[in-house]
Amino acid sequence: METPFAMYDALTALQVPPDKVRVVVQSMERDMAMFATHSQFSAFDQQAAGRFELLRAEFAASREWMSQFERRFEQMEKRFEQVDKRLEQVDERFEQVDRRFAQVDARFVELSTQMVARFNLLETRMVTMQQHIEQRLTIRLGAFMAVAVATLATVLKLIR
Image 1: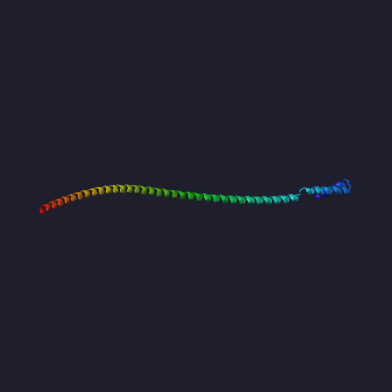
Image 2: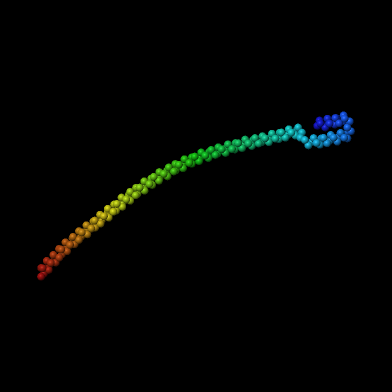
């Protein structure tokens, strides 16, 4: 505000007519109004400082959020490691079960082979026994027929 008064004093000291001084001072005030004043710069600085503080707070919150995010990822990574260990244990158990099934399969093959061998032996013995029984029956039938023929011959001789 001092500039217009100083300008007014300077122009009147130069003996510029008062109406012309008034026009110059008013136009200068209009031109000066377009420029920022010290108080406006101070207000702008305060507003900018406030906004920078808000940005700093936002960045701090973002950093905190990112660190929480990283901690969550670390927790998830640990859980995935635990799951991997559990899956390895499950794989080991399946391998044990597979080995047991292989043992059971081998035992079934062994038993099956033994049973086939025994059935073959039994079948051979049954055939041998059947042949033996047939031979014995044939011999007994032959002996019976011989006795029957001899008895018949004796009866015929006695009858005649």
